[in-house]
Image (cartoon, rainbow, N blue to C red; front, side, top):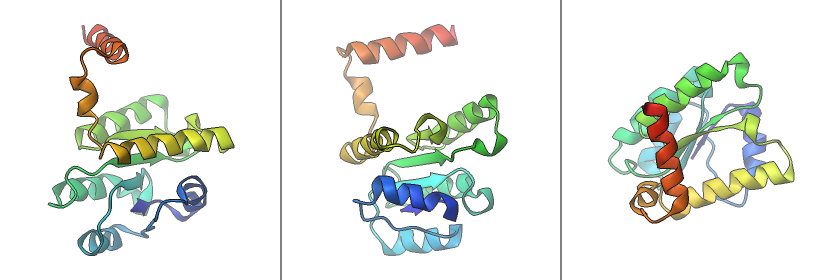
Amino acid sequence: MVAVRPEGAERVQRVLGYHDLVFVRDHDQAMRLLDEEGFRMAIIAVHFDESQMFALLGDIRLHSGYRKIPVVILLGPGRYALSDVAVEAIDHAVKAMGANGLLDMEHFPDTEEGNARICRIVDYLILIDGDLQHIARETGDPVVASVAERRRSRAG
């Protein structure tokens, strides 16, 4: 399920068009389709349906059939004049609500390479069913150890 504003739909279609994408217009349609369809992932834009992203994310996580599917939040190019601090706050908030992450499109140019990077991220989340915790259990992985160390140093 893809919940983006009309101006973002074209790029999502270009990047992920090989998947069976179902675009929704608003929160009500998304909730109806959650009951009728079997989605493997949800992509929600920050400014979807008059900024109903938080409501839709919360409802997806409360829905018995979708508690564990990957949910990715997209922040469109231009960021709608959001500061870096605001973007970081949104990132923390959506993760606290159960999203797998925030993809800030500012970091992914609308090029073949940028779109391929997005595609790899989405495919990976689908492959692991959004279970990023398996990475944390891989204690021998030096990348995981490095990330954990950076988080500890920021917190301390």
